[in-house]
Image (cartoon, rainbow, N blue to C red; front, side):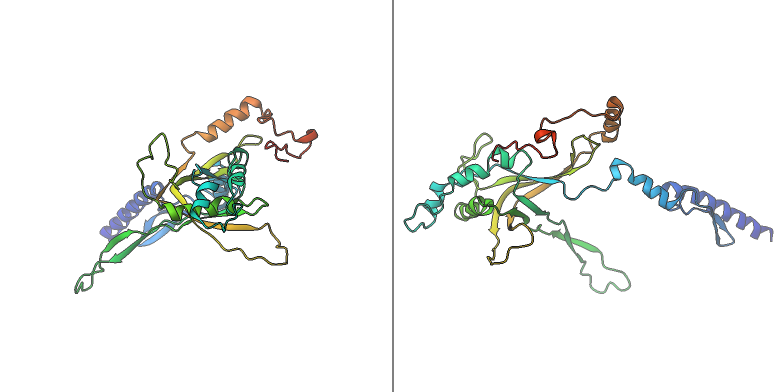
Length: 313
């Protein structure tokens, strides 16, 4: 009898030690704590933290706040030199009409600073980012009896093409920049050339770098920052999707989907900055009254209509 009580006491003591250790490992959460064990039964404790309140409290932090999904831009740098009238007309049939593939003026306008650098590529309407996965298989073991075969990695699965949809406007970015780019890539290919160096590019080099910046909020009247930056290396468009013309006006703005190949990609974040501390310091310094950080915020006539800094309107 004494031995049984001693064992029960030892089990209860060991259970308490185990559950205290479980608090730090996460296996005994403070929201649903277990005190110990006695006679083979768990002893329930009282919740020390409200599950709901703790979850909502964590979402109040900048680090765990849910970001806006619509705040992103695309940067394409650089545009190949071979996207020009002379080269494309020399590669493609014009039928004697040199207005065919006369793209120099459209390319110059559509790839200019106001349309590509002020707020990224203004024509990009959606981006489908690639997945990341690998394939596995079970080890082929003859007669493993009751043992489960081990797992073997069979390699990294090639990522899907990067898909970008561009807004269709009167001067079509998809048809007068991306379509000639696809044609040039078909003719020149992706081979390395001796004229490609760190300081200059061969005019036949059709590869570029694409950046996708996903922004998030910081503080009222303070600029957003990129929370994720995707960098796709050695990109080139491989297709401009079909477009059907009809006599009914669409309910939404027309877009043209394009697909891009790339060799590899990188992903970075902004957590190297102590953002919560920076935001608190800015807030305390200005006591919530932030100065205008851009001369374009006021709009025309001190109204809400933004100024047109491109000068094209």
